[in-house]
Length: 304
Length: 304
Image (cartoon, rainbow over all chains, first blue to last red):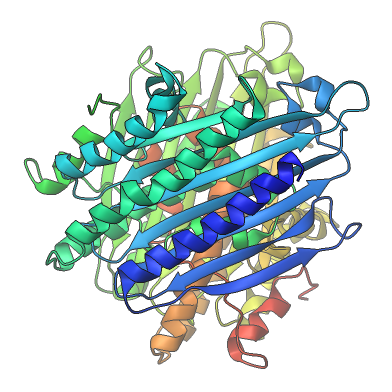
């Protein structure tokens, strides 16, 4: 089996396992799958995917878990800015990407992504790298939950050497940052890109640890908080904060912007957007309120 | 009075008149004003403005009408890409920008903007130009309304020469275009930038015609449709379509992106976003429905 076929097989299985686990958590709704395929020649990016969405669940207002396997004949210069030798090379990328928007404002939103990229420049050996991570976006944060999230992230990093957790945790804090708000998107987690240190096997093992770790990190938090009572106040705050998620994804997220600008499948890319959102000019939470307290969590912090 | 002081005086008066007219239309809510000021040295863009927002009106769910007067010591290269001689020059810009989100889905959303820019390069004479326009975004379009909107646009252009309406109407269709959806934001109107043909007086007169024309174009449509009955179906469609407004403003609108990336006042820039929004993966309106009919309006068309 080629490298990319091995990653492909892991990722489709991961998508199946994540969807099954989230359906178990929800207990009511099911994922609906769209299989899509784009033929070469009709679009600069060809390939296909399995976009799966659960709508209006008991626990998850919307959960989107997508797998895609896309390729192109010539990597755009914009996509290879830091590796100019790859411009124009044939490429292929496989990935699983998910965003979960729970109904209950006490359950945080979560995001995970694991991806693998290969390019075959005319001169030289094929180039490959892994990317991915997961991050958590609470509305009403609980320190126990955030520590659990980071503990799982930390522990899965341990076999991959000292500094792995710290480096990828900091990268996550830097990446999921809304410069125009001077705040992080949430409490972070792990983020990495361009990973090809050591062997393919080592990198692939790390990607699997991250992919598998996501459920270990998220499901216990969902189970703990999903029955917490809430009212209009918490729901309105959740809708307001979801606006920041939209701002990040549409203004700053390089993956989203590259996808939309390069002719990717719009519906699959924007599956990350929350089902309902509220924007309000000049909103400031009441001083000392639970809503005001969230701001303390939107600065990078050492959680362990 | 200097050129920019004359434009400043016109714009603050225009903001007053537009707010008064919209309050008259609404009959219930009032605009609340935030005056803001940023001192030189604390930010690359200094200056101030009057951001006015009407929230939760009877007719307008949210109406934002902002005036700003901002300046900088050195124009960033990104802002002067097509006029490299201006990079690094001191500059000042005044403008009024508004976005109106009505409650009733039969009343279209509207946007208008009029702005004036001056730069003083070290070598050569001061440079100035005008920009602006207005455009309409219906949810359930009525041909009469769209024709009225374009008739006002056409008629105000007439004194400024043959071709003015056609040119700026086409520019509007091109500018308010969601490439990732292959659709326009709405039914268009006028858009122009870099206008400095002929004299300052002629250009300023055109800007005043556009600014004054906005109310002539919009208010009759609001009055005609604001009492139309609607239900959940229409409301849900309106919330869904507002998602496209968010997508345009955050992904494609150069003014919004430049403002957010260069340290503009976030709350004033994002005053354009709708108060409530819905995103839905894979939504397709029922064939033959009123909702499906909107797609015909999201391609440029000659309305007169």
